[in-house]
Image 1: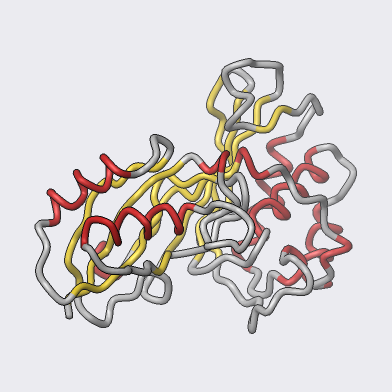
Image 2: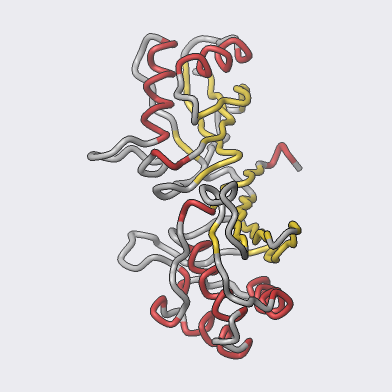
Length: 247
């Protein structure tokens, strides 16, 4: 039995997230349907994460197993012929049997985009805000995430997550020019709703409605109710996923 990684990207606008849902279409469902058709047997894929409804991915990785060798470039080509236009397969590669799309990942990176003035060309993939934001202060707050370990304050409540411990290795706002910014955050793992909650709380800091000391207290308090609101999903991208063989 050979295991394969599929690298894909998608516009999540029309989907109820990555994971198969009982009452809505998902990216995982579309990929499994296309893969099963091409390999002529029912196939299930395991993704590197679970993006929420409306969230996008420039790079998502999923694995599947097959009892015969496959022509990887040809499979990628045929998957792209079958998949909807908002899902694109970049490559399919064989991997060792112990490689797991989710558990073997060493780093994940998300980007969250905002624009500070009305722009018709950013409305679908960026969050419009007209607050006078202090990005210097927001970056000082973001740096506090690097020394944190427990991110319960930014985790969706009432989930079945076993631990809220994460190791964040990068967190900063980047100026894209023209009133556009994006927040970059990398970690070994992410909790459900974590990035959007972190961004919402940093926005509070940028509006001078929360001090750096209060932001630190939010982290230490581990109480989701004390953090900022969750930002819209349309501006969030899973940007990259790294594995041991990438290092």
